[in-house]
Length: 633
Image 1 (cartoon, rainbow, N blue to C red):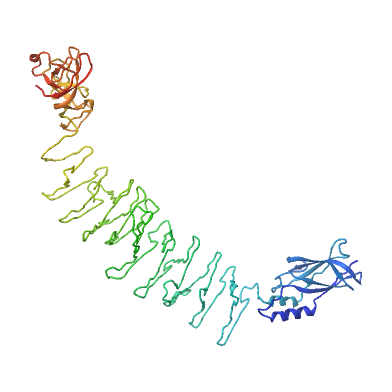
Image 2: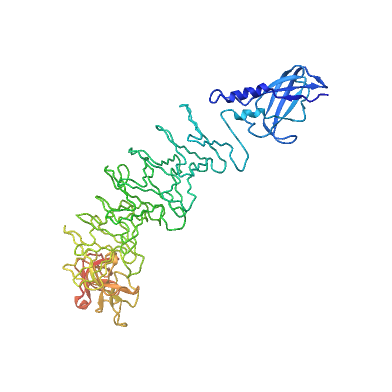
């Protein structure tokens, strides 16, 4: 029957650890300690080799094992005594510990026997926790784990890293919940002073998820100029910073958040300083970025206000100082911008101005330059009594709009009101031109009601005037041109059609190229001619063979039987060649074949029924049309 060994700690081990703790920054002690035990079996001391296992627990008899399981195999036991070096790591930091031992004797034979009870370790091993580097852990709700107090004039504590090759922090304060460090000054002085020499960091704060530096003014009555975090720069070097925020990812170098006050406040008290200065050194960086991320609300990402009444004062000022040549199309050497407003939404606004003058631009090239990369985007959008107001001086332009390739517009004005509402674009020229346009298409208008509308209220005024000083076309209309009133011209040149026609109502269906006559049954209406030598002949319906009328008299068509009839000029007519062919210059009269003309065989019979002279020929028996010069006789 094996008996329980006796456990003791050798006094010399405690003396060794205490001496090592006074060596400060020289060779520090480890966490190992010397253990001696007495092993007896059936009341007799054990001699020979034995296998011994050691485990550390936080309670007896239950509890949890802490640290690793240590083993000394084939350890020599002489007269029952054995000695071992045990190292459980940093497990002696103020908590009670019990040692559990399992023994197998002789070594390598049989099973291990766990000895009971566990042996409570006396305070001597806790000198390990006082060695340097120092580490203290305590489970307390109030109070301090470690406190340094100096009631005189010196420093309360100094943390110094004297090894230039060591980049670790001289003081590392870590918290799993609340503030990692708290600094309080009750006398009104400076709470924390941090100095750095050369390019070192005076304060380096790092956060894996919380706040690297958190500044809080907890009193609502704190006087000005109280600051939770303040950066001040007395250097004359332009590249130095009172507060410098840097971000290597997609986060923020400096972020300000506010419920009602100012998230970030910048103030310049000198004539040439900057309250907030943002610089982007990368090709795609942003110097100052303002974002209003809420889905509702009218407050801006960046709000610029000036209280100055002096001319030139600005809440937000944008300047482009680059002198490199630029191109309006982008790419290498593209234009730079003092203020660039962009909207990723088709209904968003890149830059919005509100006041008596929403946006005012002045520049040697562009005061305000707006581009739209989307086919329905707006480079510049104005809403007000004057949405966009341009004032040109010294030969310059108040507003210049330029469109690149594709479906783009230099200036796009849209009016959503009714017919008599205010226009989308208004230009007041005084005694000079209100709008001056130059280009291959100087002015292009497109609308469901009016493409371009010109109005004047003066008796001698002109709604629109078009002039071509190079003897070219002053006004080109592609489509129907309507004049509600009187149109006066010196010369009217008809380029498309070839006859003078008038619209008539028909009593039956008819087609272009047919000969028509007065309907004796329905006075005022026409019908298709069906008699030879018909003295009631009225002309030929225009439009056959895609030869349209040059001038059409009468009202707009009221139906399918309101057709233009050529009374003069050239028109194609259907011809009857059963009795003979049609020769050039031959007179044509009506035929008994419905809607057809035929050559005049007897001029006496055709008197009063002649349509005109043939300008083309048609052989006998051939079906087709003849171009006739209409001249009713």
